Amino acid sequence: MSRGIPFQTNDWDEIPFTEHPGKEGTAWWKTIQFGDLRIRKVKYEPGYIADHWCRKGHIIYCIEGEMTTETEDGAEYILRQGMTYMVSDNLSTHRSRTKNGVTLFIVDGGFLNINPSAE
Image (cartoon, rainbow, N blue to C red; front, side, top):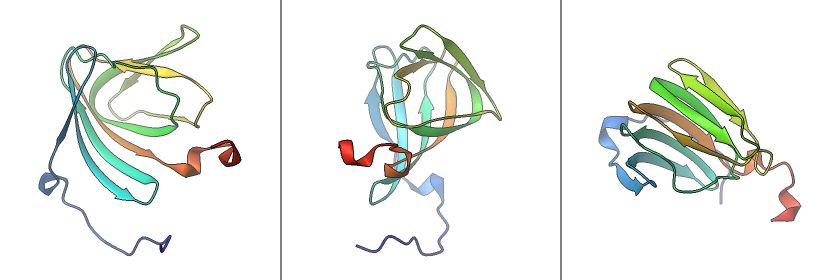
């Protein structure tokens, strides 16, 4: 499989949503996949609470709205419009929630794995 991505444009309005129920509320994903590289536009509806702790790495840009991400050690971080957070695989177990809804641009994949031989 080729590792390169040829030049292209993507119209996010043309990509269908997939539904991902949370503990409360629903996340709606639009996904583009290139091997293990996953690029998503994600909307968490108002009241969304993740149904699991996540160990996966992400680069997340907040397009609109606000969410709170809690780490397993009890710390909480607020991500607002125009902000970004980044974390590598297995470095910080986290879960997110939003009171009023949020739209995110999320990139994740093998490049965020700091110990690829462990998989």
